Length: 147
Ligand SMILES: [Zn+2]
Image (cartoon, rainbow, N blue to C red; front, side, top):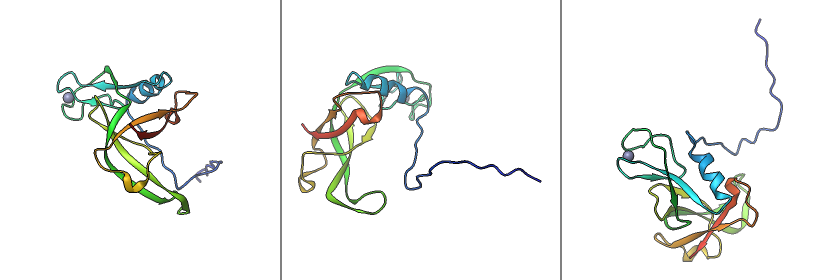
């Protein structure tokens, strides 16, 4: 007879985890304490990733060259949310842009503040609003604001 295993704890089923391979995420988080975005560059094709993977997705070679990326960038696409992850209506619509930081080829997602949803557009220039006290977590980059 097989033993039944019990795993205790709360399970947030409406959230998910993602995994970034290699040291790229740790490198990015450590430098965010100093308001710096550090990615990884491919020496062969020049692609810059943030956070950096351990291999280039174009060349399929190992990459490890650190490169600083600007905390300014432009909106490549965006969504406007009217409900939270549980489906509860939000008091104000939330703009979630996907941003290409200057000096970087991959895109990152965040929240945009300080602008009405109807005024957001693809190509809009934005910059990171950093947390006052940074701890090396994704919350250090609180949100984007217009440049
Ligand atoms: Zn490459």
